[in-house]
Image (cartoon, rainbow, N blue to C red; front, side):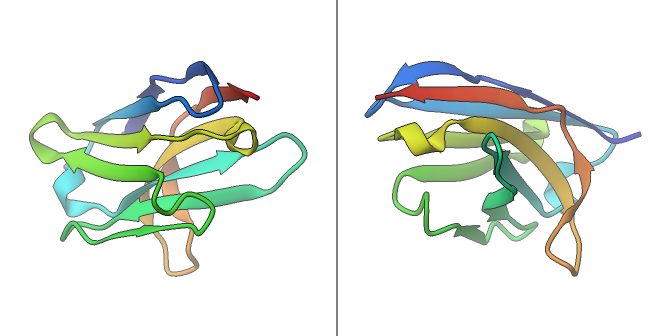
Length: 118
């Protein structure tokens, strides 16, 4: 059974940084496309960063240049370094794995809250 457990969320002032981690079990992360998705209150889910099995990465325009996705296959872990955080980055952040052709993910974590105060 695939399990994804996020950590590293919290409260930070605008301009600050946070690093989210996702510990994966039940599969080998090196074989999977993985990503981070966020959902702000009252808004739709937004895919913000993806990394595929070859290490190719992509970002949403809203986070390009500020966020960095990476993974450590030896630790079966996914990370999201978030710099220059803005109030609009406030959301629940989810780790996800197993990219689908429709642009979604097969597996999801429970999420970790990020709150940015201005």
